[in-house]
Amino acid sequence: MLEVKSLEKSYEKDKPALTDISFDIKPGTFVAIIGPSGAGKTTILRSLNQLIKDDGGQILLDGHDIRTANKTELRKYRRQIGMVFQNYNLVERLTVIENVLHGRLGYKSTLAGVFGRYTQAEKEEAMSLLKKVGLENFALQRCSELSGGQKQRVGIARSLIQHPKVILCDEPIASLDPASAQNVMELLKDLTEEYNLICIANLHQINMAKKYADQIIGIRKGHLVFDENADMLSEDILKTLYDQDITKELE
Amino acid sequence: MQSPVKYLSRKGWHQTAIIAIIGGIYVFGSWILNFDNLNGLLAIPKAFAWLGVNFRPNANTMEYLPRILQKLIQTVLLAIASTVVAAIISIFVALLGSKVTGINGFVQTIVRGIASFFRNIPLVAWSMILLFSFKQSDFTGFLALLLMSIGYLIRAFMEIIEDEASETMLALKATGASYFQVIFQAVLPQILPSILSWILYMIENNVRDATLVGILTGTGIGFIFDIYYKSFRFDAAGMTVLAIIFVVIALEIISNQIRKVIL
Ligand SMILES: Nc1ncnc2c1ncn2[C@@H]1O[C@H](COP(=O)(O)OP(=O)(O)OP(=O)(O)O)[C@@H](O)[C@H]1O
Ligand SMILES: [Mg+2]
Image (cartoon, rainbow over all chains, first blue to last red; front, side, top):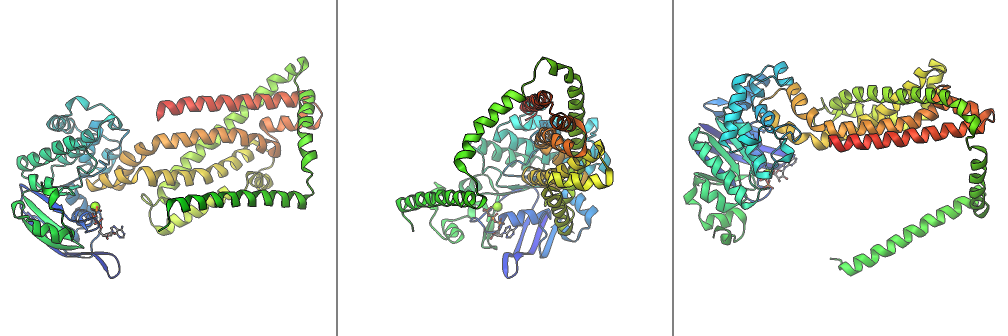
């Protein structure tokens, strides 16, 4: 269970990027965060694993507040929270399997991690996860040789090998063609169910949010304006959310 | 709103003005320096003709070749050694000083300061300064090249880290990886090709500069060029220059091949 309570953040004085953001997410839920550009979606997502230090509120993962963790505790929380990026953020020169294994670093001693020493069990798990995302034949290929959709699936495998409770996706399909985008969304949806994950994705495509998400959170100018089941998202709400008529996008 | 036509015609006008200003500065400068353009131009072919006659190696020049080659190898090794040591030092310093891997703002400012200090003192000045402490020796040349290279490489490496490694760093940080794990597993592998490319460039550059440094510090190929030149053995001096040109071009070809493989 992920509970966010009264989250606050401002990058500059008197210009709040987030104001009083509160929501709950149950395991096994695929959540889409939608809202116009600059609304604060990335800020929310990066606060959840404390890549951005917020200014106030609570972030409870199964009852423990991540915000008050010290450095060692934060490492332990972060390894339970996977992250998937718009630009994949892989080490392009390394092979696919090395990039997947990077997801284990949070569990390893500094020295073992520095030299990239992984156990047999970890390597086998990496292979089976590659199979799950449909890349078992690419394990030894350099990431720079993959297509965007394939790279994103490597990113997803990297987050899965963390044995996460939560996966955060910041615009996971924004750089992909429509077919790869569908493919990645389905994968995320299936994995959420299979592993009983909390999967949170920032999305710009409202039709995708409606199609795949269980729960939708709407953010506008740093305020939470909507937090309901996906089927409750109406045209009126979209109008207030985006300050304009974008109902055509729904068709 | 400016119309595109207006914008473009204005841009054309600006360009004309800039060219006119540069031309004006040139004319003004020649006038101040009493530089005679026409005679200057006419002197160039003469200079080449003189070079061609006097610097042309002849049959007797061959006896200098072993000595020239020996000094040349010495100089190339000096350039390589100073660059490699400079690169190793620069990587550590650049990691400490870059915006994404750095310790804090204060250290970053210090590192930037040090790098620009080393870079902005001319190589000749470095050699002269170091000559006081280390006399005429290979070590003086090594140190002068080292300090200069460090100045350039720190700056270049910091920019490479900031441009190429920040995104993957973020991803590994998010998995719970520690600082050193992030450096070794994400930052270093990601920046390696660009770093190598810079090192190769710096070696080429340092072979050229080592010649100049050698004239001042009395070592390597620069030193024998100086001796041959001052003792009017122009054919041997010409041979030395040819050998340097040959090596620099060869190095450039080799490093381009290496770049093709690693990038
Ligand atoms: N590092 C930063 N420094 C200062 N202001 C920032 C910084 N990052 C974000 N902001 C500001 O905070 C607000 C929220 O930004 P955020 O990136 O969270 O928006 P977003 O909803 O993710 O937008 P997009 O859909 O374009 O990605 C914006 O007004 C932005 O300008
Ligand atoms: Mg964003």
